[in-house]
Length: 538
Image 1 (cartoon, rainbow, N blue to C red):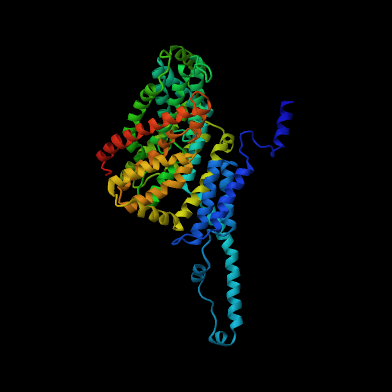
Image 2 (image 1 turned 30 degrees about the vertical axis):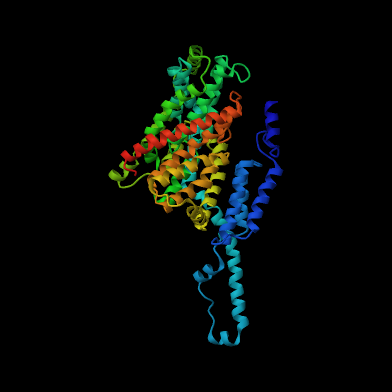
């Protein structure tokens, strides 16, 4: 009977997921905004092509805020608009110059104008046919980007962590080791996040899939519930889970799915290589300081009524005992993760001793292939990882749009407009000012990825125009792209999930978020700038 029911369910693909957004009113709001921008006159100094790309991009980003449909579908619709309108195809004149002029004899030019006109018309028709193909090709170019495939591979690695139970085992071990007091549980969450962040690149999968259920269970064991003694322990633990997730997301290139986009923009706009090794080198000191301060800072802001957490510790140890010894899959996966980590961390040494550097995405995809070959996870888990392939769909499309904004001149034009209003601030002062503006602009976004795509490239361009130290500017934008999620209760997936548990009222979340933002600025602009000075970054 069960298999019959399964077969019936498989034949009904038109049934929407209960968690899938579908609001046509919000969708038409996005369409109206995009159409309005598209048909309004392009500002002085901006080409119609650049303006049209911005219209599609603006409508797409608005769809991230309103969430009328799944994100991947919204991006796909934007790409279809760009392809079907030939917005990303080269113009007619460059094509003619490339193909060469129409060849006609002097007699034909003198006595047969219709012949030359017909020949021109034929070439124009041929170009128009090629134009659609070129437009589609250019619209899909983001899917060939290595950054996109690094993210896909990272999601697949995350799936292996969850499939084998290695992620949960590590998290439980940290809680069992450090969780004798409620404050100790805060540090246990920090330690677990720090261990998992390099290998689970979706901060939503890490926070929502591994850590948040455990935090909720510990709160329940301690007798703290959303509507019954929330401040006994639950409020504090939930705040630790949400804010520590953002710190570890900032510390590693593979700590959050969209981090590689920052690295890509840094290379293209500021010519700064900010790969895995340099990313973690710049983050390790201020990041560890943040991990040490956040639990005690939140303990001061939201002091729990219960201080003794030995009951929860005993429960966690019981769960660890039920897991039994490490499995062969977990041992193999751990070895592969360490190997990948070494390859990523030794990139500079590879150039010095081997004469070449293994690309980060190549190492990640090689690791995924090894996991399947060695039996860590079946191939069905690879092709069935919806999060990975959804990320490919929306991230590849967004890379196309972001690249188009740059190549059509929109980003440079916008940077010029803002530069004229900033004044004469230059150097490190300009970098700090831009970083703070970038941090608090997150209030206008409901997604870290959308914030990065809309703002990071612009701020890099502004930094170049203002003479800000490029490496420090890249570091601040890279780390603040994650830390800025502390500001609201809607900034990113794990924050939404933790808030949704109901332990912390919205007003209190915003108040604590503002205090956390000041702590992050103090640490990363204080300790961080000093550390980057030691590294010679400015």
